[in-house]
Image (cartoon, rainbow, N blue to C red; front, side, top):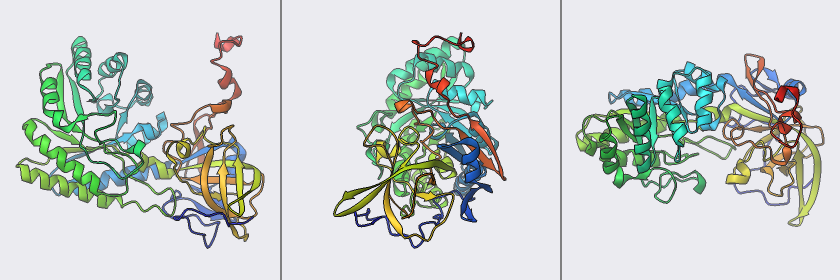
Length: 463
């Protein structure tokens, strides 16, 4: 193999192509006798038992990160006498077990569809500790959320005020609501991940907030909790969060003394490669607390209760996806050779590279080698030229068929965005903790793939 094709500027040739970069892989990930272990379990044993592709989720990492972010914000805002509530953004990764983990660690849960609400309720989450998002909630979804006693519905449009009010009135309830606004802060992230600028589908302009709040207050069946804003996702810098908070406080101060809360959303970034350097969450929390406190002092109001909604930050670094290498193909390009390492999964289990141009890190998981690093591209098996899982990575030059390959930081938005493209079955999710694995989402089978095809005679079980 040759590394002559140009690597991205951020990707350095590693001194050791077997090393696991700190902050990219789960904290429990290490090498023992050449094999990668997560939570004390050889990933070779996981692949042998559960097959590949396989999502592996470190339960202790999820729990510890939930505690860490809750503590960071509680301590930062406690200096200013403010309470903080933390909602786990379920869209990042949701199943009943993850709901149980994060609620056990003191978090609430944020959902954004009727299906996500069903998962949270199936996990016996307290409905009063759920938040319900969505730019186009159906009437049926709103009615179910109200009937379930969801603690906060996030209003996303003028029309939705009347829909939620009607559902609450019909059920004889007073429904707590927030109003999602766009602060006008353009986050430094991918365009599809920025959500607080004016030209996008979420929320209402900040200037329109007072009139929308007036409309909410006109309904006896609604109780206004406060404003909500989410500036985007995978954000490394703290400045955007602080600026958005300051702008929201200026409007919050106009709304009167009976507004108890301000929800600042989430979007805190994580490291997908060794080149990523997200600001430590403790520093972000302090910066946001100081900005909110200063803005409140300027407007002569007390610091309200603060809510945040991290998702990726909690679950992303806890996930690793295992694949089996199939074809290893050298291709002449740029006056040299680029090697395509094809795996048994692809964009059906990780759509983010195709959707956002996301970068990932990969390592051989079953062995170490002294072979020199070679620049490779990890490709999926789909009939799609854009099916690339890792666009550029240095792997040992002796990578070969049947090698076990691990891709880091796949805990967020991989399982959530998974599909059956080319009729590939979606992988199982296996949680690992203290040396013990357990399936928390079973892998699909061929029978699952055919189950909804109305042209196939139903089995006895399906009748």
